[in-house]
Image 1 (cartoon, rainbow, N blue to C red):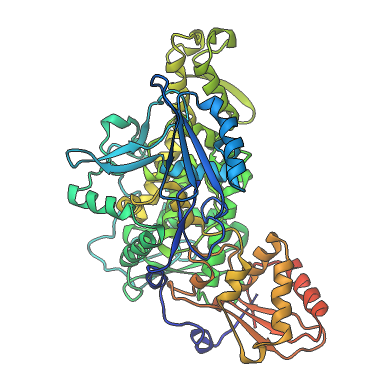
Image 2 (cartoon, rainbow, N blue to C red):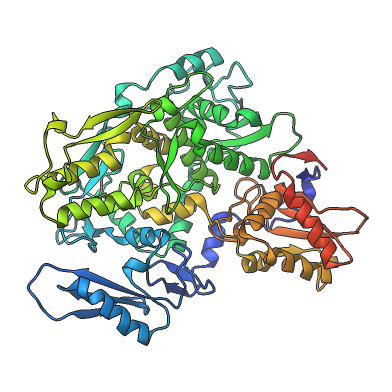
Amino acid sequence: MAVGSAWCRFLSFMPGLKRQDLEEYQLDEELWSCSVCDFQNLHLKPVCLLCGTRRDTRFIEIHGVSTPAKPATVVRSSSSNYLQVTSTRASSLHATASRIYSMAFENVVLPEDLNAQQRSARMRKQWVRLHDVHGVVRWTRRFLDAAQVPDAHVIQMNTPPLPSTPPPSSSGNLSPVVESPRTTHQSSIDCASPNDLLQKLHQAPTEDCHVIMWQPLDTTPANVTVLGSVVPPATASSLLEISKLPFYMKYAWFLHQVHDLVVPYDELHIKVKVMRDAIVQEAVENLLSYPPRALCAIVRYEFTGESAQDAGAVQREWYMLVSEGLLVEANGLFVVLNREDNSYFINPNSSHAWRHPNHMDHLKAFHAVGRFLGRSLLDGQVIPMHLSPVLLKAILGVPLTLDDVEGLDRTVHKGLLYLLDHDNAQDLALTFSVSETHGHNTVVEVELVENGHLRAVTDANKAEYVRLMVRYLVFGRVEAQLSALLQGVYDVVPPELLMPFDHKEFELILCGLAEVDVADWKANTVTSSNLDNSSPLQWFWEVVEAMSPVDRSRLLQFATGSSRVPVQGFKGLTSYDGEICRFTLKGVPYEGGAYPATHACYNRIDLPLYPTKDMMKEALTMLLLSDPTGFTIE
């Protein structure tokens, strides 16, 4: 990617807006509600942003109830495409309902027809905060998928976490510029020196970092944050009202709140030099070394040996590369447990699998991962980290139940449901223990209760067994890692800022859009005058539309430094500090053998005016075959 040196050219492509300003322009937009997940989409979008369901899809949901037999009832929700059937004979009604409604509607979907993305999005509204009759904010369960009511728990710290690094000394003021501890040995804001840092990296976190609990929901008020702090009633009520707003309005509120957290550039900013071949190791070290105030300072990145001024693209690429590196299986922090949606969960074996050249403890690494997630929210960077719905809910403090095991392993979830719904549990030869891999292929037996390997699962105690298995699967086996990660996230952002969002909305803010919408890209592109109504411009979009999704993402990465689309779509592309910078196509004279040149810092492609469409297609194809990362001088 070529990086231009003329700063004034860069500024000329910016309309002077911030990300939060865009959302205010959408407040009067017409919205439609998805029949599956109830997400309110902009009227121009033909498919749901959260779950991919088409606008004209009719979703029929059948709930079983335990009351005596009574006629089935049909309830229509706020979405005109949503139908809910309630009956005591739910299982027998599935086939009947499918036949009846498939004759009436062209696109009918039943719960068993949903894919992993749709199921996860549908579950986002299972739990909501509401005022009870006394005006107290409490968690409320809106629907059940199982015949039995599963116990609900929340993951919560019982004391606010302590900062892992000491605050700045009172004798010194903050320096306007702080160099990365990787490249500078001293700092006036009390960043650790390399020797001190290495000593800390060898140490495991103190016991205070591990105080995390699996709390029964009925003993936990809904106005208590993940960190265990109590939100005042007035604030809790305000956050509840915000949670009821359409996502676009909530997101506008969130952006304004986050903007106020950022330390002004003139007061403090950080310059970090990065080596590409050690980007993950350096990232976790640097994130752990920042004192509290520096966690909200503006950071400028520079890749060692490359000439690039960080006007946005270098930062975007840093976030992308670190995200991808953290998820690499060889690094040992995360694993894919659910092959259906390929989402990542904490590796229960991370204490053995994590490798760091300075022997950093794996819990320190998870603390850094949490800070990385928090910083991405602060910087408005969308990252390719498709985390498990269970992990996203844990970060937000949303209640977890047996239903959530499906997000980790659908086969295990079905097995637990089968155990509850059928007799003769002893025939399965289960005990109150589970096998777990430690180290390199060493299998150990973990007991769910004392002497659990000696206690058989029977019809009399199978409900207890399922409760303990749910706790183990979503919490117990990753308790310490989860504690460190939660602390890291909330070192950067206050937990109150995330309380209005459900786990799918949180994922949307964190990860943006994976799919490149060519129509949206085209509608939000600025073109030079020599491309207006020209054949090369028409050919360019025809070639892009014919590309595979992977190639479109690669082209986007070449042009912007990131393969992800912002939450607001292409109109939300930014440069530095959240300033809007539209994607631009600039026509340049064609010379034999010329290829398009990309300028990722200001989201621009210089497009030679090729004489034929085939020549343009060949040039773009060759561009995509090269490495989309790295910066060179124009």
